[in-house]
Image (cartoon, rainbow, N blue to C red; front, side):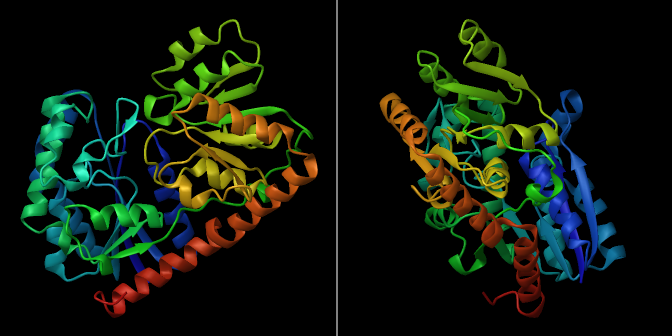
Length: 392
């Protein structure tokens, strides 16, 4: 099978970039794969990319030339925002090649991309034909102009039918699929299929050993508002609960100031892959306090692969990934008392129960989130597209 993959890297490397690289390498084991990368730029170059995004004929033509030379059986699109733009979808459709697109976020229906604003879930765009509320609230980059242009670009292509030219949309969870089907995007439900992300088996590649009976929780991720790390730190700062925080982001200084005199909460900065593995093994559980609709956080999958449970916000994708009392626990991220109740409940569990739940998390990884499972699911999607794009 010949597979052509399209992806625009973000300015700062993120989870989507990792997923594309991993899936490309995975597919290369038994298929011929070509990946077309572009990258979002800053400054004047970024401005030009943004302005061209609505109808970037230059980028679309470059991609089409490579597709014609490569002659793929299927094209898989990941991110088009903003250095590539949606026009390439129309160009690919003219060639008659089956095309699928992974929806890593909700940008197709809301400029916020994560359906969150000002630290709260934001769902107005789902039922608005044009997301005027998001524009007024500066949902993208805290700018009315940038938000409007992004919204107009996606709305324009909705109106001319570009999004309906995609043969199959891949959502990471059933929750995300339902959001898109209920939205004003008006894409037939038969075009959606669910396939989660995957990670390599960290238990096999690591020689690190866990510290038994740890009492320390772990957060790994970007230090930004939508991730919910700031409210979590504020909640835990007045307690004796231990937390280690891995990652960088715009809230680093603010968090540092809050925990300056608290020896129980530590900022670790950016961590290497081996350091992430060691931190996960050393913690009692991983915390994901997001206050936005995540796609599928890779930290959950990495934790599951290492027999570690996850305690997460009871919103979005985590509702379907975290099975209460089986592979972790969930809390209301907006309720201080609920957060503390759940974390303290976890700390009072006996080690046998925690180890059993860790085994459940590992089983979920093996059955749903391993690279082997991901490869089988991807190939099934591609083969169905090649044989009959209208069949689900």
